[in-house]
Amino acid sequence: MELHLPLARSLKDKRSVLRPILDGARHRFGVAASEVGQQDLWQSAELGFSAVSSTVGHVGEVLDNVERFVWSFPEVEVSSCERLWLEV
Image 1: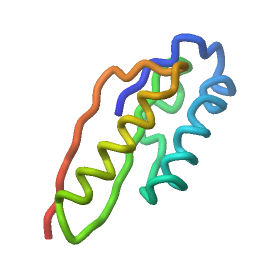
Image 2: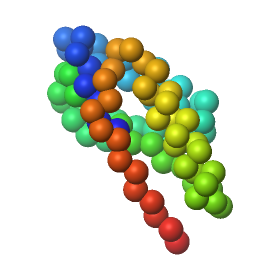
Image 3: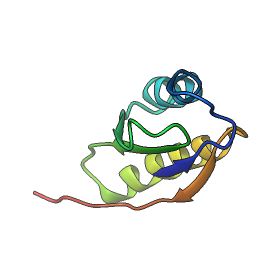
């Protein structure tokens, strides 16, 4: 997910907004979550979330919930969201 953080004035501001999103997604939905891009920009962030399951439907449901969770934070604007699927 690409995010815009319009109120962030420093990297410290940015981290204070992202930490509850990443920690909350990990604990509530059991996903791996990390800032994967744009780490040195104050008002932009790229977050990555991953989940593993035996069914595509379950992973889709989990990622839907994560996406709604991120959208619930008024401090961020979601610029884009992309899903990639790996099947083995």
